[in-house]
Length: 170
Image 1: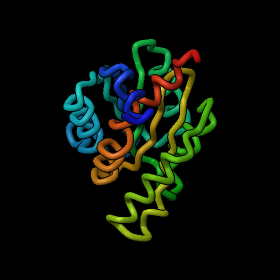
Image 2 (image 1 turned 45 degrees about the horizontal axis):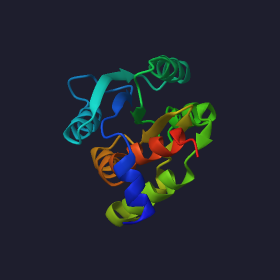
Image 3 (image 1 turned 90 degrees about the vertical axis):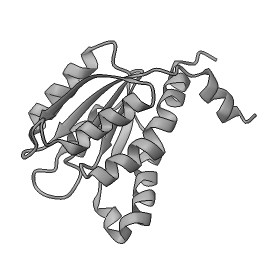
Image 4 (image 1 turned 180 degrees about the vertical axis):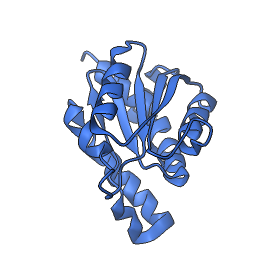
């Protein structure tokens, strides 16, 4: 058994998620991507504590993220939307400075996996991930395909492993 497999087996199996959709146009009823993040997390054995929508507003995104991180039960925050290049796409700029540690490989891998689906358009996405204290924060593009890819290929397979590494004392 590899060290990575040992770490994964030792990690907590149930995590508590908070989901934030960043959009000026989505409502709870038509938030396909936010709902899908919740469904995938629950199907993987985790619990979603809340799912909210905020507008593409720097202060609103920051305030909501601070509020979510104030809840000590939250292990993982997944934001979706606002990662493109329009003037209203500010999620990456808001979240990245709040991270204590950036997980560089997350954006690199998501773009690589996206490239296999959409080609060069993958470079037009600015996902980011990192740690705030002992909590993981992931920013995904708002498209349902990107959410599926990010959750199934990156976040769900490694979030518990990541958090177990953060809390290790050796």
